[in-house]
Amino acid sequence: MRPRWWDEAAGELARRDRVMKRLVRRHPGASLKRRNDAFTALARAITGQQISVKAADAIWSRCVAAHGSATRLRAFPRLDPARVAALAPTDLRELGYSERKAAYVIDLASHFASGRLDPRAWKGMDDDAIIEALVAVRGVGRWTAEMFLMFHELRPDVLPVDDLGLRKGVSVHYRDGVAMSADEVRAFGERWRPWRSAATWYLWRSLDPKPIEY
Image (cartoon, rainbow, N blue to C red; front, side):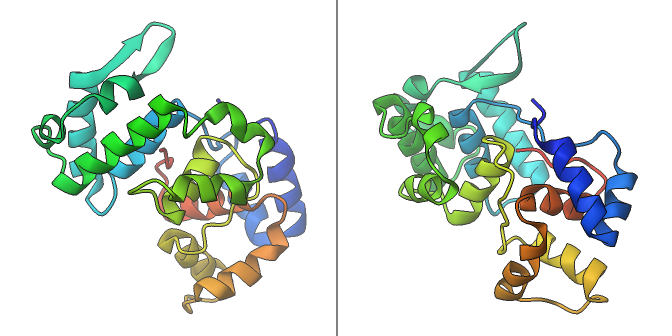
């Protein structure tokens, strides 16, 4: 699913910012895209924390093969939180999860299965309120919550200042390679409001032509 606001965001960023104008032209028609339901997206994000993309993809593939489901109407396999909540940590350990991550994924599943996390309520909540709800779950930090807001909730104005890719992109394109702190990037990113998610995405793509997906 492509954000409804993407074309407006890309157009405004290109008009305001010469660097963004160049990056938008370099990636015509490309955008953020939603791929999964809320629980599956967050479980996938936890799976990939602090390990290589290759390792994360291998573990995740085993997980969805063992516990996921897919249909003709659903292009990407999904996990049922009630089913995952009923698993023992050893069930996930056998797939390659660390003991800690196995506990995190099962705890996340219990939050969804019990209704403590209810995606239906999020439409009426602002970004900070959703982040606060998510980081209360074991294994979900602010960065993971921000990625979720961008790639699943498709929120238009998220600026993940602790993300190294974003900071590198700003450094390369705006500061001749001089590193910037998180606070400096936060202040610098004010120029992109209310489309900071799109600006972040274009800076990521400038460093890696492969689309970023979560």
